Length: 185
Picture 1 (tube, helix red, strand yellow):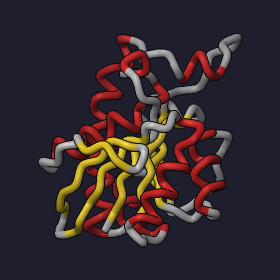
Picture 2 (tube, one colour; picture 1 turned 30 degrees about the vertical axis):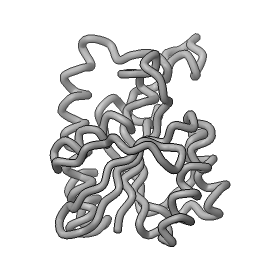
Picture 3 (cartoon, helix red, strand yellow; picture 1 turned 180 degrees about the vertical axis):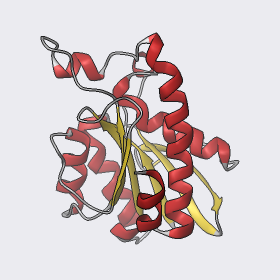
């Protein structure tokens, strides 16, 4: 069983913002695999299906970004799953727009959603896809930047990268994190 967790903030005011790119990736992954994300439970909206012969639960936490760990720990506890079942997708301001980095573990790197997950599950050893949203421009507040929408000229790159990230999740499920890293990093 796998949990594909996209980080973001609930509410239409956050749709299509840089910080909600994790939601967009899991929505695309669910669409590509015929999974409907429409069940409200575990402080999230989830969908269930089978991908590459594995049961998959697609998750959009509804706890707001900084409390994402509450949802993740509740899921792991309820399903009696371990951290090897996690794939977390989130925004990264240290990467150029559309650049993907797959990792098998790592620090929070200043990302509050990842800090929350690490704090709640007690380890940083879970699979992840960092999705580049570009570096904050000089003079911008970081929160204002990540809660802003992509520029019009960035959208084609973002759309392509969301598609690639969906494929990367499939590759992580079908072939493992190392193969996915070699294919998509």
